Length: 484
Ligand SMILES: Cc1cc2nc3c(=O)[nH]c(=O)nc-3n(C[C@H](O)[C@H](O)[C@H](O)COP(=O)(O)OP(=O)(O)OC[C@H]3O[C@@H](n4cnc5c(N)ncnc54)[C@H](O)[C@@H]3O)c2cc1C
Image (cartoon, rainbow, N blue to C red; front, side, top):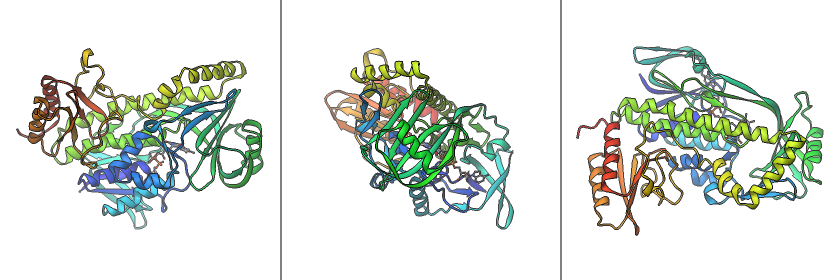
């Protein structure tokens, strides 16, 4: 029997496969298409997605192939520039390159995508799952302990499992073009022109081309002339389209699956949620599903974690998906305001820039820092007097020392403070009792404190005292199956 079957070799399916294999869990990956995905689609990878690539040892290659934009530039009034400081700076990497990096990593881990194989039916029985897969040689019946549906927004698996995907269509059609342009354009920034009921976004791509995105009336011809007209009417004066590489139109929907787990089956990526592409969050959300699910599933497969840890996947990821759908929906509305409301928006933008709010609050939201987990698998919030510590559910703060073993797949218990204080000694003892689940690291500092970090980059608990550390012990004991 296959331990884990993954349906779909888009970025989410590939990352899931790599992440599980790296944790020693064998997988099979089925993909209906004969070829890897073409075209750029997702181009912005924010910090949480980069952390996943780092987990997989791919961050350096990805950064070498991509661009690091220095600012968001909103062309309203005299221009509103939002600098992207290091923790908020995304990587601009076309999705076909991300897919290629992931598939090469999969090969290095000894696994190949089974291409030209389409899943047509899924049945759960007796704690396992059986799929029917149609390939070159006919229909194969595959039984697996676990199934991860990463088969995109139209997910066959989701439909076969009878999971609803409620939501609405976003009432806008977008043109998406990749092209070479000449003229005055700062290639180090992401550019947004917002007019009344119109918008234009220009993003530089590695290799010198740009991506042009704009809402258009549904029957607009997809031609060079249309792109040039959009540049002239909505963009800066003087940009000339030199060579059109590709052009398409697309529509978005805002939908979240009613459940992300049914028995041994999980939904991840676009199969679980979809939203407006404005803000470039889709792939990032999917890759966080991967980070959330794979350590839990690997722990359960290896028998180190209690199976009920898997129930927290749906709770935590639904919460994150709802936040992203809400946020991107608001961005979309802001981009499409009528003339009077657009004037208020532009004024507000300038005020928020002058007061530094855009830099301090808006950029971190885009960069994924504000996504906090609900308390499904976290310790209690830190008491008020320790409130400077990151709270349970927050993302691992960017000032956290780099892991001593960057590819470790355990919880990280990080103690800071004098070496011979009781807290680091207790932490070291605790890690010794939980091999393979907890790794302890101590970093010298003036004040004593600890952070318990989950393998998916979220804070599980933080505190300053050995009493607070007992809560970490309690939390880990409730998750682990080890007899101690
Ligand atoms: C035009 C466009 C622009 C975008 N821009 C951004 C952006 O800037 N930033 C961002 O974060 N996101 C962006 N997105 C969203 C992003 O592309 C998706 O979120 C991402 O591709 C989701 O990855 P996935 O692996 O979940 O699904 P997909 O990439 O859709 O992969 C699903 C895979 O499953 C396969 N499959 C489907 N059914 C079956 C079956 N029955 N059997 C076997 N295989 C099957 C498919 O062939 C496909 O390869 C954009 C999307 C679009 C369309």
